[in-house]
Each structure stands twice: as C-alpha cells, then as structure tokens.
Amino acid sequence: MNRHSANPCQRLPVAGRGVPLNQTAPICRPQARRLRAAVTALAALALLLLCAMDASACAACFGKSDSKLAEGMNAGIFALMGVIGSVLFAIAGFFFYIIRRAATHPLPIPSETFSPVEPSNP
Image 1: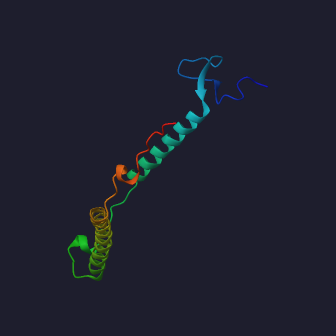
Image 2: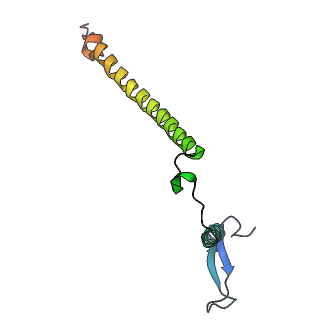
Image 3: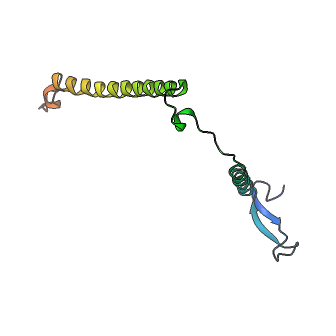
C-alpha cells in the first residue's frame, strides 16, 4: 500500500515557470478542485456581465402609473405590508401577554416553597 494513498495532499510533478519536470511540488487535489471551480465561476460571471443586454423597463419605471401592471404591483406591495404588519403585531401581542401574565402570576420565592430542614439531634 502506498504511503500517500490515505493523504489527499501528495507531491505531484509540476512543469513550467522555471521548474523542471523532474522536480515535484506539493499540490492538494481538493484545494486545486476548489480553485478551479472558483476560477470557472468567476469567468462565467465575467462573461455574463460582458454579454448582458440592456434591460427593458416596466410600465411603472416609464411613468405610466395607470396601467394594469402598476395596479397589480401596488396590490402586491400592500398585501406584503399586511402580512409583515400582522406578524409584527402577533410578536408584540405575545410579549404583551407574557408581561401581563408575569404581573398577575408572580413566581413564588424559593424560601417560601420549601421548608428549611432542621438537623436532627440523635
């Protein structure tokens, strides 16, 4: 069994940039894969940004606010505001309930609930 088989990082031959082919340098294969994936993703992003076409604006951006698209967008905004408002009111109501319940039902003091244990004299 090879002594490098359990180790993902092993010495691989490297050529170029003034390094002869017979010399080796440490290269970790998982790191090389991550680096290659990152470079590929950056190249794809750069290509996408360079090839992007101008976006066409919607009716709301052009200033035609009486269109059906603008009315639907306004309805969606108000619906989302209603959902967010109801969640925030529910959270505030829960804290109000906890505070009111703590005021009406105080916890007993530990010294009142347990009777002190007196040592017995034999």
